[in-house]
View 1 (cartoon, rainbow, N blue to C red):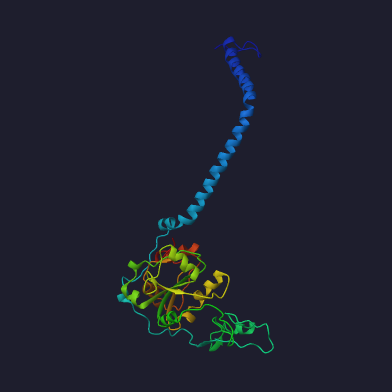
View 2: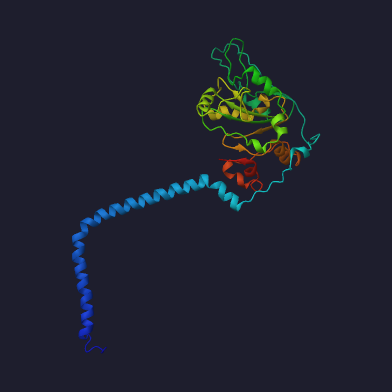
Length: 319
């Protein structure tokens, strides 16, 4: 192709190519004027599409965070717990000499203060601030610890149990307990095939329910058998709940198991959102007897995988 003659002129073939380009640009401008109205509607559709895609992405992220949590932990946090092969090899320590020995008595009844016409019995009693501070020290003493009754003639303060259930609970030496109040959760049974026959005979599996929850479970097909059990759970009905807040009522069997099971030596509390899938005797051996510990507790269930290389995840299932 020949060079320029002047700075403002091109050869004919060069001008032809550039002319075609400019003509096409002019046509596209004219065409855009004609479809400008349609473009507005197109923008609205695109916005809706983007909003829909963003909503799907958010829902998928929530699903992964809740239901994909267990799968991810299996892949990246392998769990190895050195449990014994069977309960036949269990060796319970005879003495925990390093623990402080003391006795506690509990306030079972409060009398009406003289001249107090507004007195109302409470499940937790009327503990003073000074008495509360003293109760934190390990020594022989009498303390407020729930189940406090009022004077004669006053109604029960709550958490009423059937006498047959009380008699059964007084015989328990090793306890696995849980509760559901206010129909707030599903009933998750311990994995029976992973529980030894020894534990099935010697461990008390107690599930505390209120009448509302029992009615809902019955409509779902979970009806207690002739022994009062649903699976391994012995169903214990609690009447006259002491608190309107069901979460607060749920703290009673969680923190006061020593009052509900006065003869028990070991107690395992299981949140209703978890399912026991390990023999409770093996749990006691691994966490208490082997280490010489008196108590063991876990962090919040959302961070359970951090504890001891996923130990809790292998012992409990969170559906």
